[in-house]
Length: 613
Image: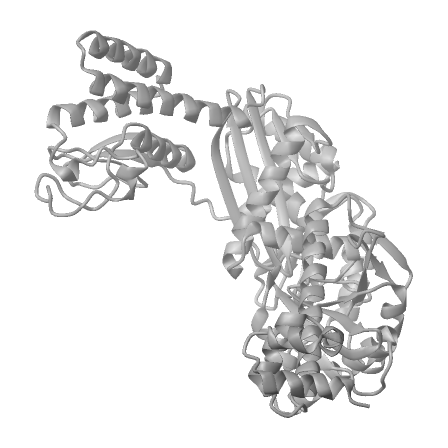
């Protein structure tokens, strides 16, 4: 992209006159609107970079520079003052090219309906509907998960049926059969018993889970003493469900009073940031933010932290990150000053916090994946593969090739496609090797890729964008450096920029590594990538072998059909019975007669065909 800003030289001259001191710079467009605010340890060095060579700038920065008409700057005494001023100005002006977060963190309530058979739900705001509202709560995550748990534990309905109007009209739903609803729809649940469940659920939601469990145990004992074993069993199940839910919470027990875990991921220009918030050693809130126009992951992480805690008054003593940020010490000082107590920023390398960071990162991938209709796990493995191979972008569309033959005969190739880490079987293709006979895997691979790229050129002329008209983000060949070396010149000659790698196996025919033209890349330590690449290699091998067998069966079948009295059906039955042509040719007349569908004349015909000289 060529920058068309006519004031580039003038702006650069102004930038070169700036002092080598810390400060904040403010970019403005022709209308005088502030479009970007940044900070720098040395104003001259940072600002002059914007108006120099554009080759190293990202697309977002190029667009911003193209719209700059002038800039202002404010000198500060320290980097810390720089950071405070930058945060304040961004909050005040919300510039277009800064990362901005909407402060949509509202309050949540527990809603208890006003009807004979009361219902529990979570809502974001009160309504004048006669219902009882408990709250407000700052954490919507806490309210949502707690109400869901309470409804499951105490068997309360979450369907749209109305009681007692809908008694007996329909059968109980699945929740009843998996013991997550007491099924008042049957009309067999007494109102007093139902309300006892609701009251227990409200006590549980009040935060006194220990008191609720003690009350249930007392009721279970009393019911057993009264020989009401059905009621006692119900209390027993509720106690067990509460214990199970409590055990699940222990998975994130970290023995730290206050902790936020932050992870950011990017795919293309889209970014996702997730925050997991812990208090009293338990997860109490989770937030996710989706951001457009993200360039660098580290810069995204740095800006996100500043914007997030500008909007939040609750700052924990410990913040665990999934990677480094710019000016870590200065940011830590700013957070400490804002909180009024010491705040620690860390990038955990091992232990519980490291596991929590990984969990947070998976959640960030999940949120980003949902936008594209893929799972976080699939997006995560593609990002790992991109980083491992040093690709410019995530390989959403992968083509893989394998050659198959039998002792140099029936040379064929298979192409499989994985889109968003899933097999796209409608895009699979088969190739018969045409340019030579005999066994030459390198030559075969070269022919197949030449034909594939020729098909792309034809599709371009026809303005087709599907099938061969779509280029892969990555080509994986079943083979080593030789296969890669045979294909790379063809790809380069076409003028297309497609990364090409091979997949090599060990002596036990198991995937071992990925190979490039310069050497091997170990994948075993990257468990998710290893499994994914293994699946691709197994799939392309299965597909090409299957095509080879189909071809051999066609050839064998057609040779048998040359025998008088043997049609397609008998040829097929003979191959199924004897397995190979050799076995058929060596069979006695009696053995041929025993094959399914064979008559004596047909058996004689086959026997004479192979034994007459």
